[in-house]
Length: 366
Image (tube, rainbow, N blue to C red; front, side, top):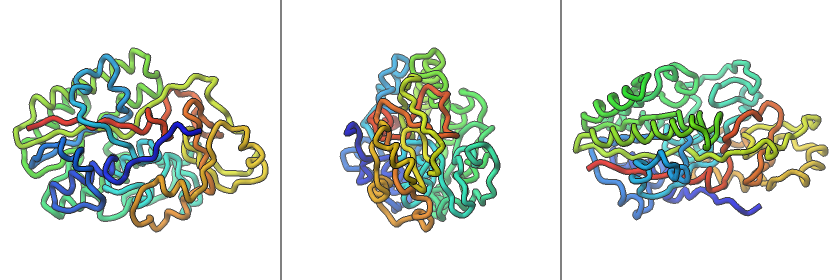
């Protein structure tokens, strides 16, 4: 399998976009900013709106309903690896690559509780709650705390039902949370908040990801979600004050899979699986799994190589304990589904195929 690329953490990734905005607002950042040819696409501003459309990969801008987004595309970036929501939102919240912030998988082995934890729900894969201090899970200071220390106000605008979730406690320590309930509210709140100079406003829209997972990219539901995303972008862009610039992107793209592409991994083996169906992490590789691997549609990646895909920087103190022995990187046209990974969906992501990795850089403003 060779149809994949590694994220460009040297200046072409989501991590670098966050660092670029932090550098502009505060004068310093924890990671490198964007490559100059990318940074030049973003005008200077005293307030930035970072608009993140969950699950809207760059290739998805070819959808007929995405015309306003396609018109605003300034360039293409890479998501962090694994190309999944919790990993990339942690990079937004910290301005760090996954190896440094430590949230390195959707399903993550956490040594302190000796369990695999679903990092969207913060439960075991079968739904049991896990006792963790969510607010201290990511390193301190995070992006929001560093902004506040420089007299920049960080605000996130997103659905009200997410406000008190365990994931929000992990991600938004130190960030003002502005709850919204409708598309009109997400637009009005973002525009009103952007009227004040000296802010970073992180506006998050989850609908594209949900519809792609459940219904796939050929569905009416997906078209409606992309149309809503395009309308949000267009209406905010028209109403922004002159001192504000909106930058848009995503956390990953999506690929649709038919049932015949889903390869179930038998659980007779004593190995422990985590990660997700596009990039399965394995602890305790036993003889039974070793005998199976040659028949699986994947590339076997050793831990040292996987670490290099998690980006530069100082390793998180718990990184070694969270790392797998091997990674099974599924072929672009296949999913590997162990027990407790969802086989019911249409859309998936998490690997390194272009449709998962490439995310848009959208720009509007002054």
